[in-house]
Amino acid sequence: MAIDLVCFRTVDKKTAKEKTVHEGITYYFCSKNCRVEFEASPENYISGDDGDDLVPA
Ligand SMILES: [Zn+2]
Image (tube, rainbow, N blue to C red):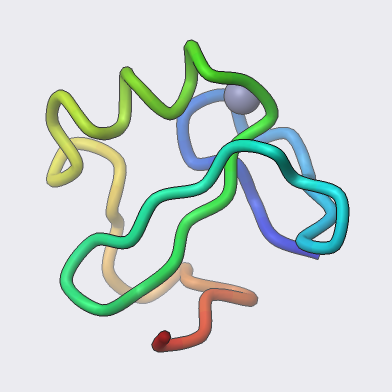
């Protein structure tokens, strides 16, 4: 599982329709809306050390 950094829902990587790659890391989202929010300002959502299940692409 991955965490949607915008709304903090858990997202299943296998079924996630929305994802984006930022600086070599794939992020998953519950909805297009969350993905767009993240892409607008990724720095606001990346905490640095809380990347539970975020694996470099
Ligand atoms: Zn979301």
